[in-house]
Length: 82
Image 1 (cartoon, rainbow, N blue to C red):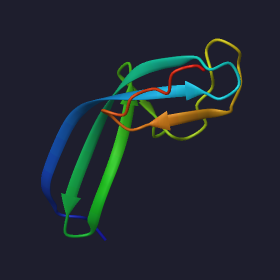
Image 2: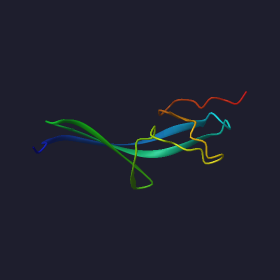
Image 3: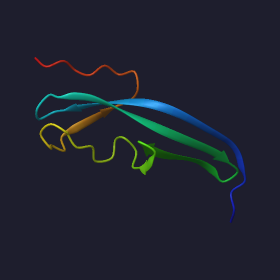
Image 4: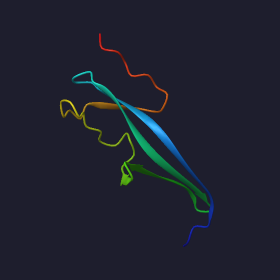
């Protein structure tokens, strides 16, 4: 069954990440392509021009390599170290 595409919306989103292990914070810029059609909706993600998983799937800290990382949606402040 083919999906009839009705609307495509492409946006750039800055996602913030916070490492629970070392308290490091950083940003990554993702492109989100949202497609609405008669078969439902779909979102595909890209990072640096390459297809990627959504920002919240298995992020890894670039500082310590930990996978204990929180992905925070756009416009969410990164928690400050205590």
